[in-house]
Length: 172
Image (cartoon, rainbow, N blue to C red; front, top):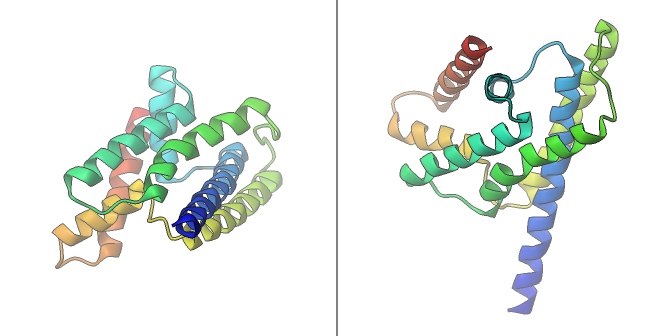
């Protein structure tokens, strides 16, 4: 029993570390100032409208999506919950220290995006290899993919992020 508990603790810590790296990548892509991913666009737009931090809005949206996942009876794990609770808070924490200012130089911006995507991918490796389930947004894609079995999951994902991006754009 103790061995199983230790394995679970290691997996949770590995997930949390991966999510921290992922959040560092999100921070870098935001600081690049040449565009952001759809879910970040939505969080940034809502943040600007309501005056709350980007990370707080990202966390609240993750919790709401987690609730939708549960309503759709999608399987969640510790990783799903950690993702919802940690990514936004990590980004806010990193932003508090402002290690990298917002870029005003296109070449630097491109470098920041490339490095940010690499760091996000490296973080995803740790997060996913811990085997603690997928994040709430990915769980939503899986849940809706099951409800539309005649459509490729890629199309379902594209529609979701398209709608999210459109809402973020309209709110901005």
